[in-house]
Length: 372
Image 1: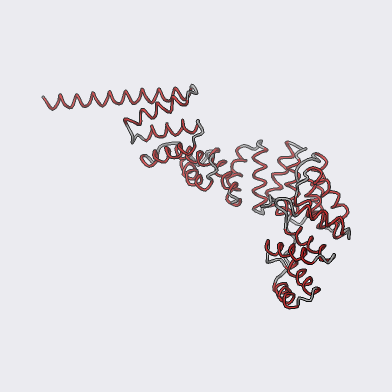
Image 2: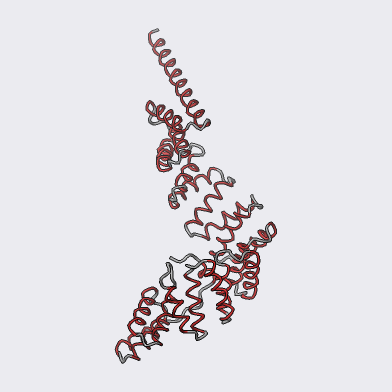
């Protein structure tokens, strides 16, 4: 009889405890829905004070902390919840989001993959995982995920634009052109779509088509960043230097600190034998953040022609430091040493130049990428 009484007391106590937990959890959820986030956070913490190993309460706390943009604390709460109960629905996705919003992209990948295993058809998870790979520069991994997301949301031109960029950097140029066609069907005046198509055409060695796409982009959006530089670079590759110079000048009119445009304008003027203008332009280019190696090589060349040997040597050595595998700076420095009678230094640089093979022109995709 006594044992039955004790069992009944325990049962009543457990039931009462469950009721209290349920009431506290309901209060916390209601507060969050009302937007009373600090109070909701405190309500979950009160629950956890009595039940520190309650996985559901930890997940609830994590959700509130995420809404409060306390993403680091939220991620910690989600991890503790998953350690206690790895099968809690939705927590892996929330953990991935908390890491993603902190720009912890590497850390976001495992929980997003786990969330995708939970829900293989979840469009949000596929998109987020694709965007995470894209942000990490792992474009080949991003493409199939973004393709899947686009197939489920075909009218989302912004998402198509990201997919097109991922395809471009993964050198899947046909995929980029497919997305371009879909984007211009919805928005014929999309300058970005024309630029993407031009970069893809350039990757496929269809230079005339690439030029036509850039010209279309210039017509619809002459102020679009990089649009004049991209067209100018393609004209430069075709040795159409006067036309290229006009485009580089227009890019600099739009963006005075565009280091790539300044460097290529200086190079173009050098090729047109406008040495004085070239020197002035290149002097400006090398002072800009992200100035490409070309600017230093060309500046060294101009200065050497003017017998400013010390300054020319410094410019060419800087170019070599930026990329010692390129033959041009070694060769020009060797010539400069030779002209000064520095036989041993000249011989050493000529030897380095002979050992190297000149690389092909960089693709437009590489040229238009942000410079570090």
